[in-house]
Length: 124
Image (spheres, rainbow, N blue to C red):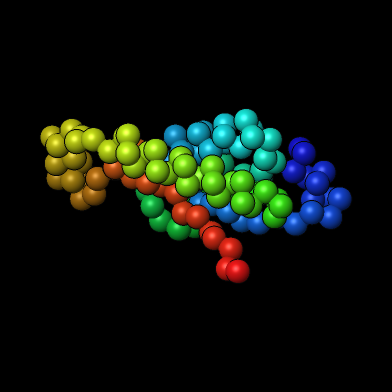
């Protein structure tokens, strides 16, 4: 709600992220809330159709922030990505992956294997 009020007052929105996993979305929302960064999420409930598939404009959530919060949001996102890369990539269930591939010709990656975030950096 705060996002809409600030936009109505003349602030500009900036599309910051595409997110493909529910876990990443939940974490980033909580970081933005804790840092008082207003945001708008587009297509949040469509992610539940087929999560973890990295296909632009099919299963992603778009996150918009205010232009003035860009620098703070980028720091938060980069810290989250770095911690995710350091702490969560682990060897998964090989049998499950083989079974999925044989039965469906593709594998649903776990959040541990999949970054699931695309950042739109400003060109300055």
